[in-house]
Length: 583
Image (cartoon, rainbow, N blue to C red; front, side, top):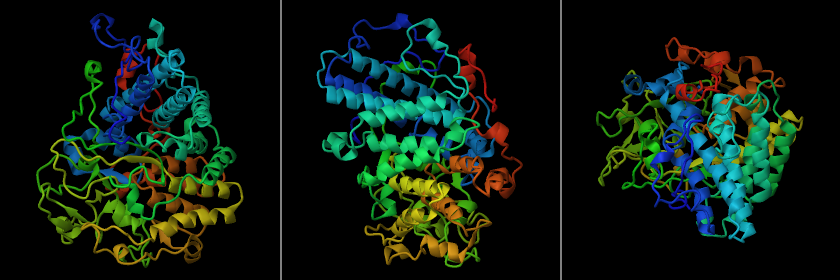
């Protein structure tokens, strides 16, 4: 599936809510939605079209990693972003305007995905000549899952007062939907994931056909449903997280025996071993150097929407800084020193002490970590961080790179990046969510083994090394991270917080395990909205003080900065739409 299923015909009948197609420009000989979707293969292709949107520039091809990670305390903008890519700067610094390119493109892409899901759901119902009900129900399940995913991310990013459509446009007014009233979107997200769970097969059944590897499964929908229950305070303002419902879904998922942790943490962020036993759902990428990205997005792009490259720009945009030695304008976002400091050390009271968590060198390019091949051609030139940013440099430990989901060498492709799949939810996230639920349900002793599974795996000796890390400690022997019980007994102070309770240990573990996977910012919001958390009132201090830590003047203001502003283009085109608190 990785290389093939996400390319298909997709006829879009409306992109931004208030954008109507020019119906006078149709080619009478071209395939249309009325002549296509008649066979089983064409129905499969229609569902593939919905998957395809996530690979686009507005999806994980470029924009979504910024949309989900930039606002947290684990990333900041670089001087290169300040000089040439200020949309990144504004995301990191909470100065986001309604014309921000990332939020515009992502908002647009998600509504295209909504349309694609609604279109194929209608076409499945109309395909009376396809008699394979098992296939049709599975495809319905995939479409419901992808539609639920669409509204999950839209709501998490833009708030709950946004348009919602469960059908393709039929009337002129359908192109100008009003935002849903508060309190309604959350249930629609839940409903779609519940529908998907009922229709989708288990992973073991779906993957019996190798061409289906990477498709959404029952476990994918169950994991995102659990995530939805935990994020209810964000998805439905004024609500509390539904710990009971989340725990029930996670318990079922864990006991399904469909998933397990990989031997090596690094296997979850490279192009080898994708769609492995730990992957609950991932966005598929293929490094197609001869493809066409169609990076520009404008009101006329409908004509070329069907062409799609399957590479991701992440390696160039968020990867190693200037590793090629050129004057590239890339490297727009950098891990913060705070992110580095979260990884445990041999002596946590001494910032200069050696980091003992192998996940540091597998996630971040920084002092004492992995090497990088600065040559984009066949000849290798591996360099440790200290040879790229010397210890004598004032930027040592400040200029940092991202290794997770990035290639270990400079790209030979001048325009695009790599083919590494984005793992949206991994089994380790499931285990940590379940542990968190158990703590909230006053079952802390039951939570400990699930946290220790994740910590124990982090200690595994790397079995397949490369010049990037074959000299590091975890390539020579197992790691020495203590169990979560011993961590709490030692009660180290990490980033100003003493890890002396199970609740704080889970927060710490989520930070280091899931760094750069799009969840930390939302975790901070969840914990702030949790009345059971004794640290709730100070949880957002790391965002409020983010600018101060970087000697900047910006500061996070929850009332204005929790969500992204509704894009200006939507407000201009949709007469029934209004802005949100960020506009």
